[in-house]
Image 1 (cartoon, rainbow over the protein chains, first blue to last red):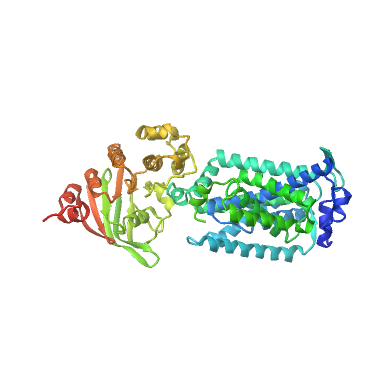
Image 2: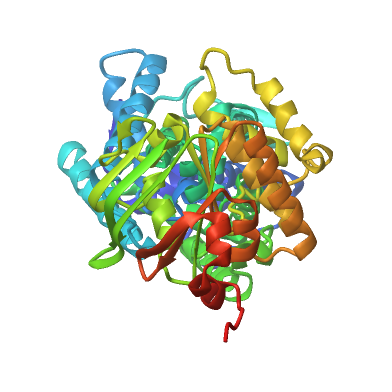
Length: 331
Length: 239
């Protein structure tokens, strides 16, 4: 285990260390003059795809809970952080694969407990009240994590090779971990859509999201479905948190930024639509990656916030959502 | 089958139902008529377990319902077809029906395919449209789907909340014919309606609900002849 405590600025360098030197050395000077070579282009593209996929996974976590309850769980980013942190700690005692598996299970249990303790007993709560509860929970989890793990920046070891090993794809130098992130996240998305489409539990969850009253009248326990949706999105977030830990690093407060990006992507794609979230995630990731050739890196987060604001003003139902469906939901 | 004694229920501090007593025998069609806000829907929701009882007793198939969860009541054999065609609109018609069979799944002697065929026999239109999303069906078809979904659970008592709301008179006639056929097949039906004439036309017995109290009860034919009922609910002036 490596335990970094560099100032945040250095984290950007590490994060983009695969870029050609002229981009990484002056990341926040704001005066970059980058010639867009084919090499640089595919390098940006892959960075964009990687981050886009990560955002999409966080957004899918939002969507699962939104679909069954109609609330945005702002603690979703904290699930990602917890998954990474647990895996890093457990990796001290056991090999990587069981450590990740156990971390995912622990995070799922935490997700279920959160729902049971803070959400389940509320008798027909308003959506606003539940959202404020999740914001409070995200702060609580972050502070508890700070208490346990401290401020240090940690990371899991690379699944294959190390920091400097790279694979050449389309003239871009890609860390093998990037392929892990893309592969695992794509598998999650595929399995999830198969789950919702073909299993009876998936069908019951869709029923709860479509019409909770009618689901209850069919004999489905809607409250259990909500608990299950919290478990599912916690597990997905945790797994994503593990695979991305070697390249993005894990720190007690890394969930906040991810939650904002994930929320942007979920809104951009249209809340509740997981396939749209992947498309929107890739779009945002690629826009962000290419924008650092034009605007200073420090403005990278501002770009996603700007996109979020524009979308909320112009198309609140998202790029791929239908305004008709949005009009029918009570949110 | 269903016995209610001195039932009181409502929302928050508001008491909507005031000491209601009624019963439904096996094989009957019992109708409850009343104006808007009389408490008809509240009564059904209380029986279905969606609203808690404040006082009194509900006895369903020999079991007393005390804080019984709504899911459990469906399992016991009492299904509610809610008002306003509450179908799963983003899910296909076939999947809607399969969800109706949720409480029966895994139980001995329940054949989902066979049950599905039965429903398709009663509502042939659902078979033609089984791949469509339920939200794309017409109002009448959605009402049929809601009824079909409730029947998939093979309920012993089926409660219907205003199945005629917002439907063309011709379709209302169809729906009521189907309710009669359900009774012939041995089902027990509790029908809540504003369309008093049509409901009393097919029912065996009826109750008139006004501001949370049962004011008149008796065989359906008697109620049709009752002056108060005629004046208040059948729109007939008797002078």
